[in-house]
Length: 485
Image 1 (cartoon, rainbow, N blue to C red):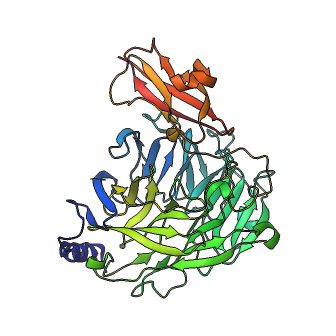
Image 2 (tube, rainbow, N blue to C red; image 1 turned 90 degrees about the vertical axis):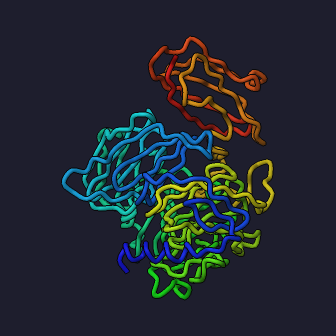
Image 3 (tube, rainbow, N blue to C red; image 1 turned 60 degrees about the vertical axis):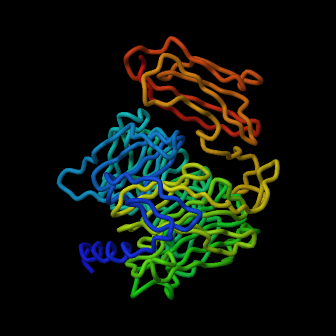
């Protein structure tokens, strides 16, 4: 079916949606526990994005946009850059990756390194030619990069990236490749057949194989929540519809039990979830072209919980993973004239989508949030130690914007107050810098009062960087650009 015919068919079918369904103008059909908030159509043909330290980076075939998501339901675009690809077509980066300082986009036969340290002025600072990679992922805080097809790039000098001779897949020779995910620093899980867990900490050019798992079909994406310590690993396939994907072993979302994975040398498949075509009244698309795409776990996921997954014409599906690993659908968003590629939790209630037709939708999950196993004071759950057996690894916690509240950057400022948020792992130390120069430190009881900065640069832009340390020892940092009054 041509794209025009597909759009017309979608419009006709979805226009017949029953009035009793929860809807919003230009949104879609939702279950009772999901709300459509708004749409950013300028990102049409987007297939992926990344949330990092309070900023949302989204790519299209034309450009990169950066949003400040402090007000999650009303994100504000603070930076923009057109992709520079003279003489060749631009491919939308499905899974852009960033450490908040540089962002990686592999377009055709070239990796582009984008400086995003100033959110208002992203720019390409490094390039390296190499064979086309479908996706590219940061390794070891973006000092290295792994391409989905095996490429390894040395990014220790991001302005002069170097393609390493040899591929990571030389170590494993998979039957198919699609993506890689760094589940904890230097520990990589591949979306391949079979699925491998690799250790790149000692030598990123020669990663060691820690485990191998056979998936039921083609593997598109994976996540191992909580820094690779969760009991469950999450895996999604991908398949073309013929006429739908309900009987295709590659077209499922899967849970794997990781208990004892080191001794067993792999994971054990627990459950699979699939979609079949249906009617708009029951929240399903009457047709489909492809099945299963990118997904993210809820911030509270721990030994089970809530997962949001993009499913092409079936929109966004909300799945409950039980403490036994069994999967149950509990909500949906079926957009008008949409083809959902990816979905991201911005807060514990607000999500953004990347859609090939619609651009970016803002959604809100309003229902009860299913919980998995309770967290222990040490943050455990699943394997006793992180992948690679490093019990001394740094604690992993919440995103930066869950620890610190910064003022809005919409208006010019005369003073700034940096305040810690209330969490189960409270902030015990704050370090604040302006344009790289340290301006304030607060620790102990002083942290609760926050830090107020005065005598700011007048009538020009400046960057505020904040580093935090929590009671458990977790450290994270973020920054925001302001304009002085």
